[in-house]
Amino acid sequence: MWSEKEQRELEKMLPQYNTKRSAVLSALYLAQQEKNWLDDDDIKAVADALDLTVTDVHSVIGFYTLFRKEPTGKYIIQFCTDLPCALRGATKFYHELAEQLGLPPEGGTTDDNMFTLEEVVCIAACNNAPCCQINLDYHENLTHEEMSNILSKLRAKSEKESTTQP
Amino acid sequence: MTNKYLDKHVLLRNKDIPNIRDINVYIAHGGYDALKKALTVMNPGEVTQVVKTANLRGRGGAGFPAGVKWSFIPPNVKPVYVVVNADESEPGTFKDRELMGENPHQVIEGIILCAFAVGAERAYIYGRGEFKNTFVPLKKAIDEAYNNGLLGKNIMNTDFSMDIFLHLGAGAYICGEETALLNSLEGYMGQPRSRPPFPAAEGLYAKPTVINNVETLSNVPPIILNGSDWYRRYGTERSPGIKIFSLSGHVKNPGNYELPLGAPLRYLIEELGGGTMSGLPIKGILPAGASAPMIPPEHFDVMMDYESMAEANTTLGSASFIVMDETVDMAWAAEKMVHFFKHESCGKCSPCREGNYWLEQVMHRIRSGKGTSFDIDLLTKITHQMTDNCFCPLGEFAVNPINATIKHFRSDYEKYITL
Ligand SMILES: Cc1cc2nc3c(=O)[nH]c(=O)nc-3n(C[C@H](O)[C@H](O)[C@H](O)COP(=O)(O)O)c2cc1C
Ligand code: SF4
Ligand code: FES
Image: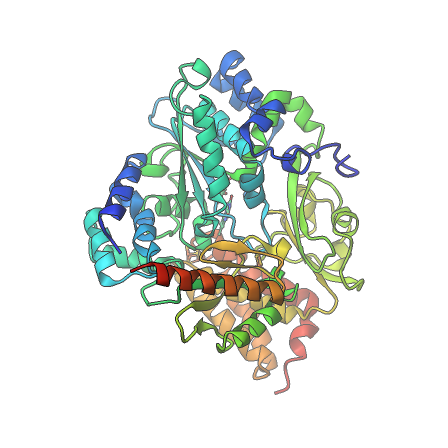
């Protein structure tokens, strides 16, 4: 989403760079913040805000893994199964988690659009495997019990938000 | 005593001093004294000279002497930039994350000292996108530094002024390569640039730029405060000083350990790491994440400095040691690493883009039991075509896991060949 609020935040950042273009990743993060992915309007808004072409912004988005052009769950679980974590049981943990969420081994989004599960490469927390990031918050030394607690808390938080928001 | 080789932590001081991320605690333990010394009794050239004499070598992987790099900055071209490499994406590496999250003021003080030495008024810390929340304590520390007159205009009431800005990437290992990082920071796809020109001549926004790793810069405050002789008491003649070793995989106690360079690998793994979780013998050790050749058992007594590692036919790189016990199927481990490099190839040059694609295909064919003995040689052939033909080191790193595992553990591949 791109509103006056995002525009204002972007303008606060611009003076720290020599070119507007340098702020493209920051602008895309702002645009993606609300719903976790970027639609055509968001991309156009970022391009306009930074005097770039839409094609140019598309190529930047395509290059980096943290930007998305498809709808995702409200919480994106990026679970590390790279070599150091895999040596400490992360792959098995990941598969069990996928099963608990009713998802196939390659991950995906739950039917209620609450969680998107993905396998990722190293996130610099290999000393605390199994580990993941949920919307970029670290969760480390996971047990299944803890993971269930985290997921129920997020579910509850989401329900609360949807009842308090008009 | 931190360990047999180190009386107390020099970098991970958070392990000795609770709350050192708070500026008052940091200052109470000598924090920003090095900066005061530099700004009041030293000139910029002297700061560079001390770092040069200490022979502090870059901790991002290549081991290039930091002081020498700083001295390449031309004296008359302005502005000059400092860029801090906090991309930390090599599998098994998690030291910069701890430094920024737990001892952030030492990173900041190192950056200010570097900027003073090279005449920069702006520094950017480029962190991988996944460090969004690791940047929270770092941002807080930067704010504290501003509020204490340690950043911004007229630092410590001298005529030196500078700013530090935080910048997040968005998920791409290649952005750790310094010229790809610069492109990314300028808002382009993070693909490497050709060199020359080197960043010292034409870096960020085509201006002279110093790029250093987070850990490299964390070494600078103690070096300036205590002098190069003190620093050179640690480590070896050609690899002096202190280094953080990230230890992961099949060890009982994974984590970051600080040791002088040249300490024995066995000490790190057996004494600090507690040996393997299973108690089973170790089959292989990766010394620099996925990027350097694996160390086979005959070299487990190697010393961890740049020269000794080279003699053992590998590199120290980022010093991220991944330990694998004898239950590990090395073809499986190699497939994991091939997957990593295929995923992270930036696509700019075809030997790397195509080579990694084919390596993954053939690996997969072998591991799913559909390969022939010809396929093992085919892997080697593909790696030969990649070697010396890639535009940047990523493509060269990618061949290491395959070549080393085939060389030392060929039977792990052969057991999949039934056709
Ligand atoms: C593929 C690739 C990935 C790299 N990743 C990192 C990284 O994550 N962090 C880092 O500090 N250096 C990384 N480097 C090394 C940098 O290019 C550069 O040498 C380093 O930032 C220089 O700083 P130093 O001299 O203080 O080590 C990487 C290099 C390559 C080729
Ligand atoms: S070697 Fe790989 S990562 Fe490096 S420029 Fe070529 S394609 Fe990109
Ligand atoms: S391998 Fe999983 S965090 Fe590094």
